[in-house]
Length: 84
Length: 347
Image 1 (cartoon, chains in turn purple, blue):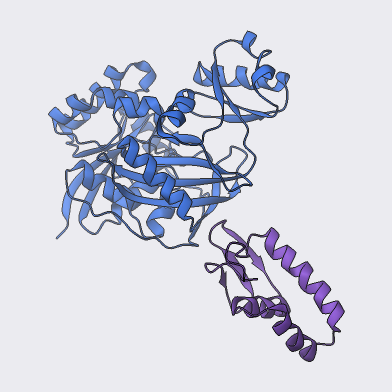
Image 2: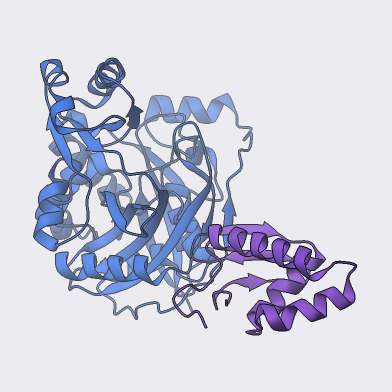
């Protein structure tokens, strides 16, 4: 799953979708996952990094991850056309 | 060395329902090639820009177009005789008719304009939008003009509620039932006359484009925007420029097919399927045009250049994510100024 190329993400976690004009604020963890997605990482690549860095088990992380993805989808931040 | 020019404009009502006069003037004043003298043309003596002396250099009162096209144009010619005008920029839909019909008279007198032709103006009219959509293969909501309250009952046969009730020139209301249509119908006819336009309500996000066509099918500039804060009058109090190639492509297509001459505002609704419906095409520069100037496209300046017959290179880019936020400001003036305008018709 990739983030649309034209989405702007600032260091502070401010996300701007220039196609819709909507903007969002993300916390540090949200931003971190967004960055991983942007780099083209898959769940299998992201999961070990997150479970190592934070106190979360794999099953819980997956649940939160997919919740997060559906939120990104709802906000039209995901590039559904060029899924890999 | 900048070229000295005199530009006359209307739309000085910088109120909660603002005319485009002040933002257009700001664009022209920021020109790199013009040193403009601005003549304000005021219909009412409390239009704020009349008293904004850094914005408007001189103001003349003019009669409403409803008093007759000839009366308005004669007043402009009278002003032109004592205070020569190079370019006239009309900023209201309702007065365009008078200036389009008299464009030759104005041209002969030496006053340049850059406005749509009568045919272009008529075919994009709210009442003619369905035919316009068909002719140019564009998505428009189903709509119908009505001229009597007896037609309101039958609307349920052709429309689903809610629907939009719109005035010929301005005003648009959402109505959820027949009673609300009747109420809005009466309000609109009292203000703008007939017909009243009934339009299918398209659910989605409202987006807008300000554009300038050179009259030969070329787009000189276009900037898409989404309103971020809307007043109770439906006006943008804040907006942001968008990066939406579909909106730009649609704008270019319309300007190319119609060979649009002058400023234009496209009011669009982006449906949930990401389809762009044309809700309205306004035949002039909108009041939020200064956002385009701030984003890198000085469309008011380009329009003056086109009016003067100068070659204008189309703008290719603009800054995405540029915002505008309107504000109100209490301007203090003296009774003397108000008195001067009210009694002499100029300030």
